[in-house]
Image (cartoon, rainbow, N blue to C red):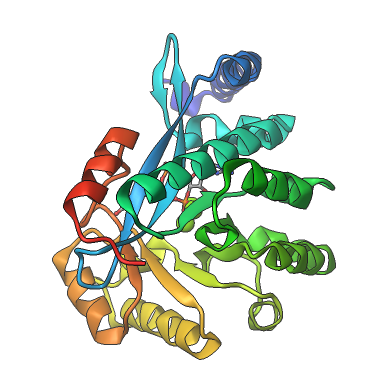
Length: 280
Ligand code: C2E
Ligand code: MG
Ligand code: MG
Ligand code: MG
């Protein structure tokens, strides 16, 4: 009935909207508290050598352990955090915690693997972003070369500013990773001009590999581009044997995906470091 009744449709639509609004409002309200009460938890997804065994890196992925709603994924709260600007403080907390944790792991397990941390556009564009990164490095004692900051292609929308910030970060010795590579705004020109150290092939390309030659050709091309640019390449979202086998025929990237490991808790990742050969 509702489907063919425009008035009813509007009513449904409106109530959905106000529900979304209420949801948004609660998340924003709770986010402020969550930041002060340390309700955020970090998960660690290992990145493997093409052999699928050696751990060569790790990406930090934030979760919100909400007192009433349980564990929330980034998609459930990051948009609100972005929109309200709370992402700046959240991102800072995550970065600091990640560096502290990596330093501890490096000491305990005698490894030099790097840690990758996602940085939102808003956080990246803050005037004091580079200073904050520098302070965190000094405070935690993590070698700057062991820190990879993941930015998305959105940052190329302000190419001049991004260029400056990246130069400053590089001066600190920090590595810059281009996340979700292939899905965003950057032209080949941008890729050529900006000093990225890592390309992360987006998982959407990997998903297409099984379907047609064109999907495979896209991944192949991105790996080649990485080789030509002399950057490290990480392929995200590798889930199947087929994807892994095919990628092997194209090159030598690092692999991050459920085929090898889901994001792990701190304890689980410690166990992994204890058990498997790490590579530096
Ligand atoms: P991302 O940086 O591209 O991270 C990879 C996402 O893919 C993660 O989702 C990870 O759990 C998921 N993933 C890994 N392997 C596989 C796989 O084999 N199959 C599939 N289907 N998915 C896989 P997650 O943890 O939900 O994070 C989503 C996004 O949220 C991240 O995408 C990143 O953009 C953002 N994010 C996460 N943590 C942070 C953070 O601390 N700060 C900021 N600014 N953004 C973050
Ligand atoms: Mg990422
Ligand atoms: Mg990604
Ligand atoms: Mg993503």
